[in-house]
Length: 367
Ligand code: AOF
Ligand code: ZN
Image (cartoon, rainbow, N blue to C red; front, side):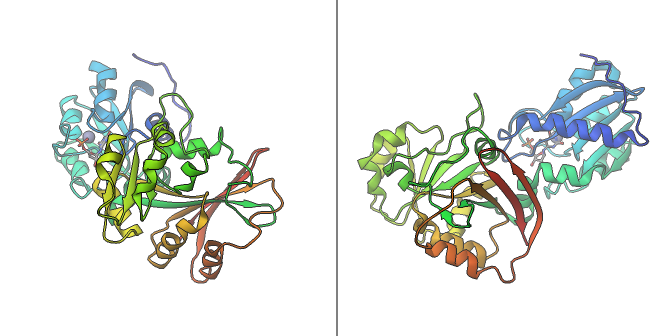
């Protein structure tokens, strides 16, 4: 339907409409992988006449929904898209052709698509068709919207984020007997954004809360457990059956009782060596763009992965949660020693923080 949303009256309205595209795109957080989040707005005579976003991989792209919404009003209008329109036949036909057919006069693009099969070819196709194209508006915002997608496109690996909790005096919290995560708040929102979460098997055996997004209909990340001996699952089938997300066990035990586990809907992936290389490659092949390494439960299960992640620069991001607890683990776990000793040479950038009465959360990127 036509909306009479007046233009912002700002000096440069392009930024305003791209920001609206990003807002629309965010409606599908957690649902588009391996595809990016994309929003599109059609503007005519300073009014928005059509809006759309990409809801899910396999479904039409943002431009198609926005053009449908605008109908004949798309003619001679300007299309704003947070990501460069595609120019290829994938699961869906090229958006460039849809824009050309709709006879838009101008296209404003938030950022060029890093996907090598697009990579400026969409912009070129539109220009060849005589359409004016402006590329790179609110580019940083558009990049942050799809940081995991971009990272995977450029590196062939999903974005990896390390998450852990600390007491106020700086000790690690394993969260076994040491308090709880802010389940209703940042943690469940975090889970909604990730395609997979690596968790400790002790969450099941200790009957702790297993990661699940809380909002109805929200994306549930795949749960990855690393386990040298996958047979432990046969002892706790119920707990595993009740979890919200799909469970995958990485094991190097080729004789793990795969059929019994499969009966419970759990997938086992047998690898020679259980490490981040194997896990990230697997996730990439499955089209997963983001993985959360969720450090709680039995901390020593993560020791090797964290060591490897830091050594090979696989950890892109971290989320530290500080809980209102004075003492953490009585004994400093090896994991913390690993993190402390690896400080040198690892640079932290783009720090952000937020607070609620339940916790303080600090986020940043490792360079
Ligand atoms: C756009 N608008 O809304 C999206 C785009 O398999 P397909 O057909 O869905 O194509 C997936 C690729 O298309 C994806 O990797 C990315 O390069 C682009 N996604 N492009 O113009 C959209 N979702
Ligand atoms: Zn497209």
